[in-house]
Length: 301
Image (cartoon, rainbow, N blue to C red; front, top):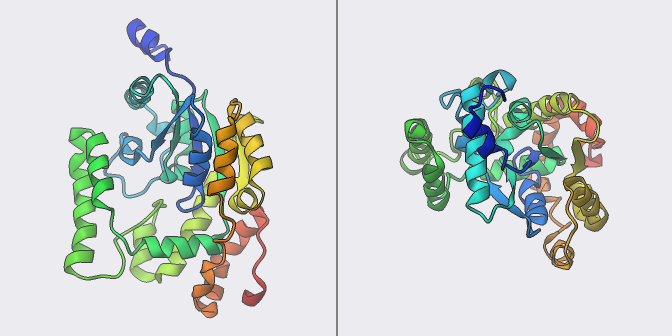
């Protein structure tokens, strides 16, 4: 970062290497982040989504890469991380924003020193959870938080999205909001002519495919991969690997928390859908399912 002035280099030298939890929406990123950020040396930054749109807030998708990590963008984002770190007791920042599953190359260009965790979840559990979320506009509390963390010049882009969602739900009485989760290129065109379950299935598959491509470019050992199902069925051994990967020594309280909050009994809600509906989206899913070791359930074969 030779383009930084001497004062900026000195200031940013205080920035501790952040930890990024990467994973699609509703794939266990919040659970994983909470189980790590319980360590007293860490502070969680929960989904500063507008921060990651800084390079181009009007872009109709979430796919950003190293070309978007200009000097100005990199300087701004690293300064925001340093400010967050120093305003929270100088603790190392653990950040998780699910839309970043499409921004891994962007993150890596800005934070080459960071530690990364990548989590995936069964597409059927994903479809069930995400379909329910498409029915709910952002809460007032989250709306206020995002406004506070959004740069003034970027606010019009965010206001437009929020107003569209509220108008669709409150005025037009539509079942679903305009879009939910990571926006792959072409998602709005797909929403115009495909049913929602197909779009959600495609959303899972495309995010998986792009993330796998980008994770593969890291040097060995920089990214720790895991599956949500493995974590919740046998949390302690997986968490010990995760804690070691992050360079932290777990406290007794972290072990107790893992036993208390991890619930393995929330993986069958997808069966609320009609089987034929799920069979219809299998072509969108099967290639990426094989990559992650997921089998097609017997009732869908």
